[in-house]
Amino acid sequence: MPAAMVPACDFVVFGGTGDLAMRKLLPALYLRDADGQLPHGFRVLAVSRSGLGTAGYRGKVEAELRNHLPPDALAGDRIGGFLHRLHHISADADGGGDWAALAGLLGEAPGRVRVFYLACASDLYGPISRQLAARGLVSEQARVVLEKPIGTGLASAREINQEVGGVFGEPQIFRIDHYLGKEAVQNLLVLRFANMVLEPLWSAATIDHIQISVCESLGVGQRAGYYDGSGALRDMIQNHLLQLLCLVAMEPPASVADDGVRDEKLKVLRALQPISAGWARAHTVRAQYTAGLIGGQPVPGYQDELDAPSDTETFAAVKAEVHNMRWRGMPFYLRTGKRLERHGSEIVVVFRAVPHSIWPGLDGSMTANRLVIRIQPDDGLRLSMLAKEPGPGGIRLRPVDLDLTFAEQFGSRSPDAYERLLMDVVRGHPTLFMRRDEVEAAWAWTEPILHHWQATNVPLQRYPAGTAGPAAAAELIERDGRHWHQGALA
Image (cartoon, rainbow, N blue to C red):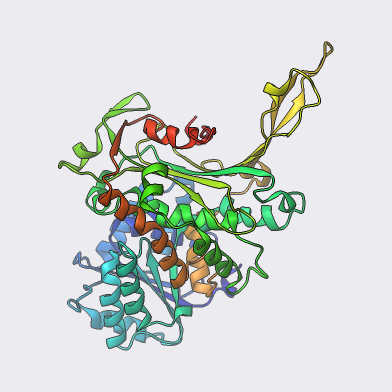
């Protein structure tokens, strides 16, 4: 969409000097600007407690852009034009600092779209919203973006939603999960609902099970303080992996506009089998990485990085079931972890095996078909099928792959997830964002796992950094006669 079709906007980032702003938000806005997507007059107003002036802030952002983006993305004088859009205001969530300067800048263009991006801890969402309301900064064209995780459990999520909802209407609230902006995730909807060859097969009648893996080779790094109060279940499964499960399992929406997709995702969340204490003991795994090797280089264990004892999980795996007509009785296996041997995210759809082989003696060669949806890196699709090996001497079967890598097929650079989602906020398109009832339904399913882990003393397993995770995760799926697909880790 050309810049002329993007409304004039003031983009206000609370936490404007933080890691998220510097690594993701500002690079995404810069790349949109470099592609001609930001209209004349589009401003970025950063709010933080750093005490920086606008000139100092622009210098900091320039250094961060040069650190996080490839040199060819910064060619020419494009960076200078973007930096001119930036302003910095020193203020805090409690009303201290120069809120009057923020009000003055916004008052220069009262008719513009105002996006308030809360790139800060979720317990500040309510106080910031109240300050915005008290100072008359919430216009009809205002929108607020909330980062995940929203709260640390169901009660805190409800409280935050109530506080923010007291200032902004639900259509003005954009709860962001950047996984929903990834190219491969959006292609999942097209794959399912624009291709008649797959949709009739998309059920427990023909699919044996589905695996969803989000694997990271990095440790917690500078996020150790935050992460230790969260853990893999809250940080990843409650949002990213459950959102992927919803897109895989949901019924066809009437439309991708308005609330069609979000309505269907909510139905999946409400159909998830509730987690009992027995299910948590038998079908969940929690683990933490110890020292090991990544790429041949030694890396410390989690507690060494934290420099404190901790029982926070850095790996979690869960067997889930969706109790509806399409999926009842078919398992979904979810896993996520840090300091694993490779970085990668994928959805693996494993179809049922052929019920009868017409080639005597070749039953062992009749491997099941698999559809692998690669989310990162190298997003694309791979369908594994059986074919006859060429040549005489009888039938010999061998798996072959039909492989589609989006970058090779389409050639052009795919926008980063944040690039797409930030522009959707400015344009007021809510489809790829979570609604309040979605967030609370996800917490209602996830939180009992945490409670059962504590109440029943589910053991914290260990795994060396640079491996595929704890042995208990392999046992979780192998007890059902299945195996993890190693694509993301191989």
